[in-house]
Image (cartoon, rainbow, N blue to C red; front, side, top):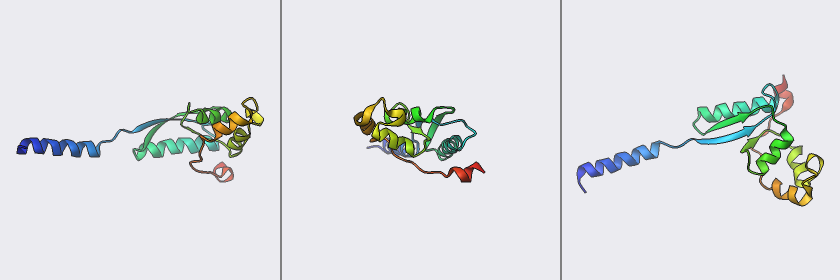
Length: 123
């Protein structure tokens, strides 16, 4: 292999290793001036700053619907109280129309990223 070809291959590998595509994710949250809204917006800003992902936030959403959207794969991230995935897993409350079996199957697609304390951020 010629020195020029070898240099070109090494240069392209180095450029390819340092450049990476940033993921584009979707998120749903409540109003932006609420604790869930502040939490998701802060997450999106931190993810963008660190080059992890570009999170496109839809604020003002109904969180019961947002949880179901995440479970169905329509949205990547949603802010929600812990009770909602529990209710979904049982197919009760706002998810009664799904039934216990379908609710349990959907709930398997949900995981918690982090928690936040409403009282602390509410100050």
